[in-house]
Image (cartoon, rainbow, N blue to C red):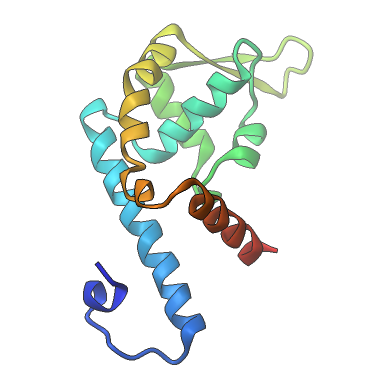
Length: 149
């Protein structure tokens, strides 16, 4: 569906305003779909993101600072997310033996298993992007990178 129909607005100041609104609207649309897909697993998108970062580090530990650097949503509170994941037994936290001020965070086997269970779910949420061929998807990615330059 076209942006104009989705937000019921026919006129825009210019093509740049329309593009900006389209990026914001589409990002929200994708996030809502993904959030709904993870809800039955008791996971939020930031929690899922932290688990994926920790899986990438596995078996090495991560710190809260490393999580913050790599998270997709920079406004998320990484410490609070780790608290919730620890309460679900999906991660562990331990004082770093070489630096007592640092905390080592590791994904547990339960966390790894949950990621295995949700892998195909996450892949299926790219459905809207399947409307693009490989060249178009690469071009979209390049254009989004260009916006952030």
